[in-house]
Image 1 (spheres, rainbow, N blue to C red):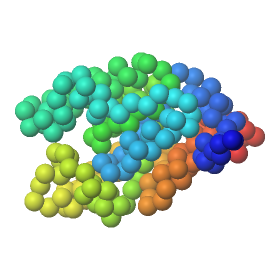
Image 2: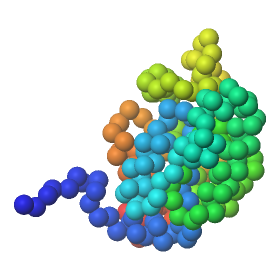
Image 3: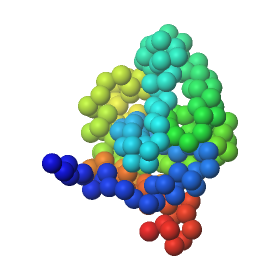
Image 4: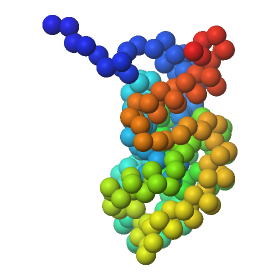
Length: 199
């Protein structure tokens, strides 16, 4: 019996061309918590035939502590320093999809390294979308406040102007994840491929 494949799994000649166009660089997803970096990143990597790495998961593996434990025991500056080193190491591994933590792109050295060795993609989401998503998952140290909504709004005000420096901006909205993945693939094709091959 012949198995039917989901349309998103069908061969797309752009996938091979995008991988070639990366020329050893990583696709680096940036954005606030709840933007969908891990879920979208995993699907994007599968579509393009690339490895996927969640930076927070890598940090937890290396440190043998969860991110909330690192924040609680050592504080945010310690975490950010380790995060910077992990991202720098991962960027040396070549073509892959990296999902970064929400604060990673705020570090100027990290932004410079990503610009040198990656294509940055900002998953931009509205406040109401982020709030609905973050409420579904505990363990977000920066939201352990009396008013998580106000905290999230403040983080948006601080970080969105910096995220806007990313190479590509894609809206992360309440649509199937494959829709967002398709948008990213179209944007990557437009950036990396000759005009005639991007569509």
